[in-house]
Length: 177
Image 1 (cartoon, rainbow, N blue to C red):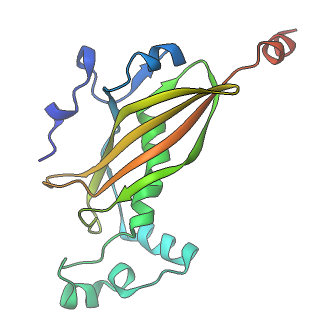
Image 2: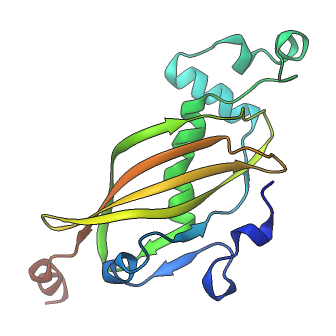
Image 3: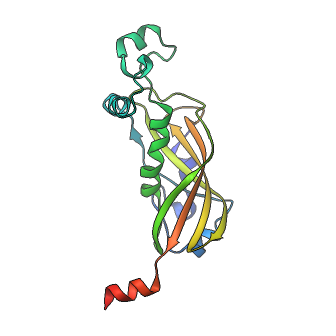
C-alpha cells in the first residue's frame, strides 16, 4: 500500500526533488528521484477527457449505470487520462535547472494494473532507469508508477522516455546583452 513514508526521498524531501544539473541526474541512475503531490481525478475531468477524445463508453461517463453494472461500483477514468497526468506530476516533482526544455519522447511500455475510480487521489513516483547522451542534451528513461491512495497495486506503470536539452550558451549570452 502506498504511504507517505514510502515516498520519502534522500534528505527527507517528500515532493519536489530539485535536480540542479543533468550531470547530477546522471549520478542518480537506478534511484527513485521523487514523488508528486496527491491529486484527485474528478468526474468533471473524466467527462472533459471523454468529450475531447470521443471515448464516451458508459464505464467512464454514466455514473448511475456504472454503479449498477460495473464491477468497480462507480465510473472509472480512462487509462489515457491517467497516463496524461505524468507531465503534470513530473513538473511537480522534478526540476532539471540547466535544461532549456524537456520533451516527451515517447513510451516503451505502459500497463494499467488497477482502475482509477472517480474521485480517487493519485500521485506518481519516478525512478531513473537509464540515461544516454543525445545531440544537444540527454535522454532519460524513467519508470513512472502512478499510485492510487490506499490501493495495493499501482494504477499505471510506464517506461517513459524524456529528453532534456541544454541551454545554448550563445543564445543565453544574446539574451543578456
